[in-house]
Length: 377
Image (cartoon, rainbow, N blue to C red; front, side, top):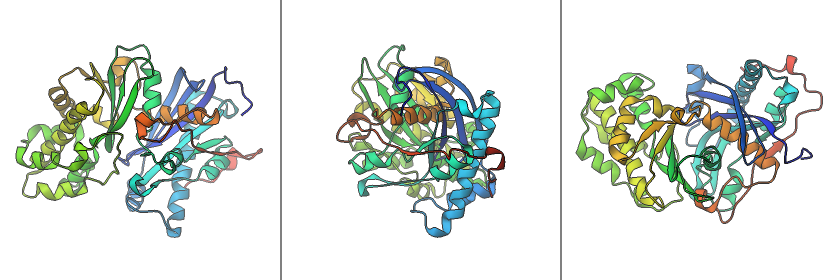
């Protein structure tokens, strides 16, 4: 890229998490190392029928028959970009790059596979803005886990905070970034996040999630079932390590006979106590935990986390961060790092052999017609 590395880049990050709740979009300005400012953000929920289309792709590599779903997904992201630019009051030409994470449908790094759907070239054409996509593939090809991938952004945000600190993202899967002094950083997936509880509520109550953790709060933790869940070999593996959304899908069968409330309580405790187990894999116990992702909005989970980790646990808003936008901001930040050839992952965050850059750049057509861009199906 020809732009000076000393000047900030304006980026839009797009994130679609494993909870399948929608598209997060956020504006960030960065020089690739520092966070200069964070700007407007928004979340566009998936329409229920489209969420079901995405769910049908989970656990497999997309086939030719899924091409229309991928195009529709990409165009939903384009609409999110258009709406965010209006929200931010930015002219489109002021945005240097879009960081397009896509939707993870399959993550099997042990087999050298990670799949995030989304058409970066189509998004660049629809928006008229350069797009960096396919962030994780280079890491996995080089032997890394390909996840977690927001650790360097967490570290950039936490620069002035007391260390050591942990940033815990509770999405469909939960992951933690441990940040010490200087460049001391590590990250790994701690275990299930919201996905199991969401799937339990869908299967047992016809609901998309346990709103506000109310069902879990009314239930009783089945300690026998919980002990069996925590016996999973994953929790005894040293990091770096990562998970697919459905790696614990068999857990629901272990709840047979439990009430809706007791199942929700047991699965919520599973998330919290697996986070507590993660402390033993960190270089030193965090003095504070900052929580982002949808899990921070669940008071029952947050209370269980406080009991489990034995340290202050706060939503990231307590540090002045935007927990709804954080992961989208991270991929705007990583897009700029990709353009500058800077590392996106480290041996201590994904297990890759050495610090690795990554991402694939899709140039926008020189005369992209935003006004006539196709709308999603």
